[in-house]
Each structure stands twice: as structure tokens, then as C-alpha cells.
Figure: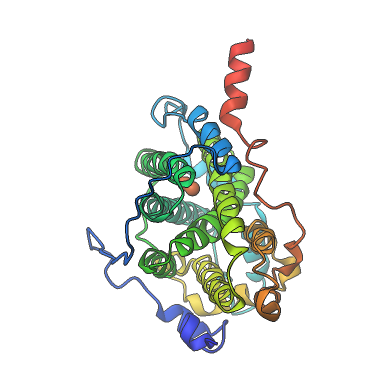
Amino acid sequence: MASNEKLIGRRDVDDLEAILAVTNTDVDEAVHTVADNAEAIFTWDYEKGARPALNKLYEKAKHSQWNGETDLPWDTEVDVEKLASDMGGNPVIQRFREAARVPGSPFEHFSEREWTNLVIEGQNWRLSQFMHGEQGALLCTAKIVETVPWIDAKYYASTQVMDEARHVEVFAKYLDTKLTGHYPINAHLKMLLDDIINDSRWDMTYLGMQIMVEGLALAAFGFMHMLTQDPLLKQLLRYVMSDEARHVAFGVLSLKEYYGDLSDAELRERQEFAFEAAVRMRDRFLQQEVWERMGIDPRPVVTSMLAIPPKENMFQQLLFSKIVPNCKKLGLLDASGGWLRRRFEELGVIQFEDWVDTGEEYAELDEVAKDRLAAAAS
Ligand SMILES: [Fe+2]
Ligand SMILES: [Fe+2]
């Protein structure tokens, strides 16, 4: 049974110095190489639809492809300053504004200009991390095409490779043509993506990427979609989320079958991996690079972020609202004496266990199909 040290490199999940010590040490590298340690698997069983749920998903995916160049309103003017001041009232910024009233707070003497800059930098950082995460998904699904033994899953995964290429493309274009700066990949996210790619077991690519990273992304995109006033970004996120809902469903549908046959010891390894991924993603959202770029000591800010009671932390709640029910559906919460349940309790996210899981909701979230129907009717 692995200890916290072995799983996440520190005994205390909230060890501030250990979290901040993880930094991207080569922000200028142009390529990054990771061993993927897996065997490519051919299957000679070509029976299409042997797994009807995956086949249905594949057919849906073929219908709902869209073109990142022509299906989004790229001629929209994006006024970064105005959007930032409009977003200044969002709950995340509001919390920091409240913190500014405490004497000695790093925000104590913040001017309106600095508040606006914080929103702008936060947006640059988030979109950059989305872009890097999308590239992680692109590589992971290409790996799944090779490593999964079922033909219906190979077919479906190939459509996801195309989806993820489109996602990298549209986030990169939005950053390049509409925003004011890029950030390198966050080191916690990088560690997680490396661990996912590195693992030799095909289901771990699914668990790490489809369930954990994409489950979180679906929630984070939803949060940004709700907050942004930019019609271009709203439309971009609507379409990306339609695809992501299928991706998470692909993970749930595939692993549900596979995990039914695993032993308790094997499930425990999957629980530990899910926990590691949850901690890395929580750490990533402390956005330490933004504080550094703003010239703020991250210690007091991150300390106050970690001290927010889970019930009051709407952002963290939303982030885990897809992951926890999906883990439950896969039997990961309660295997091995409820080990993952207890870890999610410590992270303050267990309250989502009975929220809707993502095995089916992709059909309702298909905004691309809805727009096409509406266009055909008009
Ligand atoms: Fe994606
Ligand atoms: Fe995805």
C-alpha cells in the first residue's frame, strides 16, 4: 500500500513549501520527450458494434465534427481590458478582494489597475493551461488507438484524436490572436501528463486522461463559459464542451466493463492513481505562476486558498463535480475498503458522489447538432 510520499511526493497533501517547490524548470524547451512504455495491439476481431455503447458514441462523433477555422466567429473583436473589468465581479476575484481587507494581505494596496491585470493574467494562464492539457489529450488518445484491444474503442478513439487536434488548434489561435500573453505548462499538470503517458497499462491512460483530466476540464470549461462575456470564447467553449462530454463518456463506458473484472488489489492501484491525479490538478489550480508574474509572494495567497472550507469553495466544487460521480460509477470510490472515498473526503469533494455521471449526458450536450438543426429549420 503506497504512502502519500510515494504517491504525491509529500506526506501532507497541503504542504505549501512542497507544492511551491514543484516548478517548471525549463520554460524555454521546445520539445519534451516522455517514454510511453506500451505495446501497440492489433486485433483481428473486426466485429463492429460488439460493444454497442461505444459504437453509438463513434457514430455520434462522426456526425458532430466541426471545423475550428470556419465554425467559429473569429472576426469578433475581443477587448481584453473591458472583458477583464466585466469579470472583476466574479466569485473567485471577489474572494481575493475580501482578502484584501485583511491587514498585511498581499492585495492590501492593490489598485483597480492591478485587479484588472490579475483577471487578464488569470485568463492568459487558464487558456494556456487548457491548450497544454488539450495537447496531452491529443497524445493520450493517439496512444489509446494503439493500446486498447477492442475495435469499437479504436474506432472511437480515432475520432477523439481529431477532436483534440481541433481543440489544441482553437485554444492556440485564441491565445495568439485575441489574448495578451502565453504561459508555459504548469509543472503539476506536466507531472500528471507525464505519469499518464508513462504508464504501460492501457486503462491508466483512460483513467488519467478521460476520467480525471477531461472530467475536470469539462467542469472548468463550463465555469469559464458561464463567466466570460466574450461571444467568441463562449461559442468556442460550447463546441469544445460538446466534444469533451463524449470523451468523458468514452472513459466511463470503457472502464466500466474493464474494472468489473479487476481484483481488489488492482482496483487499489487505480484508486491511488486517481488520488494522485486529483491532488496534481488541485495543486495546478493554485496558479502559482500568476502570482509570480504579478510580483506577489505566492505563500500567503496559496495558504489562504488552501484554507477555504470546501463548502465555500464553489470553484473547487465545480472542478470535481464530474470526477467524483464517474469514479463512483466505475466502482473506484468503495473498492479496497472505501480508500478513495476517504481521500476524496479529505480533499472536501465527496459531496458530488451522487451527481449525474457522464456516461450518458453527451447526447444532451451536443451543441453542434443543435446549431445544425436550428440552421436547417431557419
Ligand atoms: Fe479536448
Ligand atoms: Fe477531450
